[in-house]
Image 1: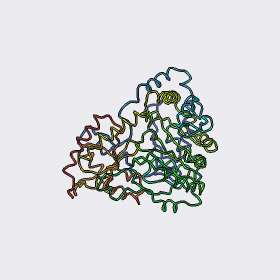
Image 2: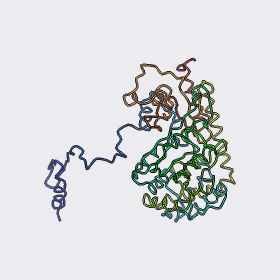
Image 3: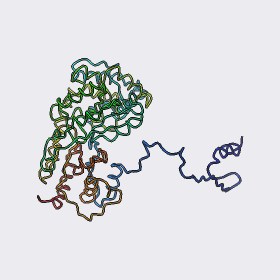
Image 4: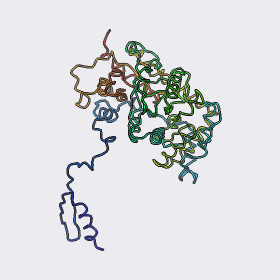
Amino acid sequence: MNSSSLIAPLIRRATFFPLLTTTTSPLKRQFHYTYPAMTEKLKPAARVSGNRQDVWSIINSAAAASPIQPIINMGQGFFGYNPPKFILDAAKNSLDRVECNQYSPTKGRPRLLKALASAYSPHWGRPLNPETEITVTTGANEGMLSAFMAFIEPGDEVIVFEPFFDQYISNIQMPGGKIVYVPMHPPEEGKNKTLSAGEWKIDFDQLRKAITPRTKMLVLNTPHNPVGKVYSKEELQKIAELCLEHKIIILSDEVYDRLYYVPFTRIATLSPEVEKITLTVGSAGKNFYATGWRVGWLIGPPELIQYVSAAHTRICYSSVSPLQEACAIGFEQADQENFWQETINDMAAKMSKFNAIWDELGIPYSQPEGGYFVMANFNKVEMPKDYPFPEHVKNRARDFKLAWFLIQELGVAAIPPSEFYTDENAYIVEDYLRFAVCKPDEVLEDAKERLRGLKKYLRED
């Protein structure tokens, strides 16, 4: 069969495209297609076709446009340093083993499942079954997507507290879920003085009103990103009682479960009844300073976990094998290395070191109870009225302007938290910026020195 007979059928199938042919030699033809305007059938799904720039692209473009280089990135929550040596050694050694370079079982490598069961059973107050109550996923995010895919049908409602981790939204929309938002409110006096992040509160009357017969799931995040709040046991009991009353699945995002500076309660451990409706999400990336490893897990009753596992199998089948093995070794050795306590001590020290700049400037902030983010209130910062913001920033909430201004004038990147609220509720956090402190101490010191440049923009009360 010659080349002409191969090409002809393709041309016939593509007749809906205008076609220009240029002959450069008897044996070589070049075909150039001119694509028509987007037709209805070629349109992307609404879940991925939004035109508004997201926060990450705006911050990246601001960083690229800033005259101050290099930018100090206090925005994105990736670690600025490596996992400890015993974790890295486990990963390197795993690569030398044949079985660790092949597919893992879809629910996770047996060694990791066993290590997770051993690590979490003391918190649950009973032995966890590694075969039926835990499933390993490709990062916590894919684990949450698997949970939504397992239980959400088109039209089912999912309650999400604002501010939310932005990936929740697209993950819920993928299976056709409807998101019902319940905002968390900062303390009114937070604009004038530093208070605990625990002072950010949910209006429980508002939460009750948000529940309908279509409510299938509620997403909880504790310790909370970006607020740094650790939900109190009393707050968790109120949430759990509502979910039990209305038979709502709790998806508890606890990826910062090893970073808490006040008492931390896992909602699944409140009672056997609450445990039966709860899926708990964990992350090796957050636990071991390795966000690029993409190893996560869900813990829950067999009657829920089996369907999460089934969805995970259909999404990506299995997760990266050598890093699962490394995580297993990490859990096995963490206690003898005193790693968990050192993790808390180290991050608490970074928090104290970095937040000293806000005390120095008189800028109030929410004192974090967990995690590695801090929310500072920039109500006292006055930007020049004629500041030349680009068009895609002009119409966003004040925190977007603050973030752009900070990058351009001081070379420090932070995240505007209104991105994690609906437009209707963006005003709630328009004076705040989120800073990630999981960076080397020298980076924190450099950031503090640059942030001293805010002094000339502070309003005197």
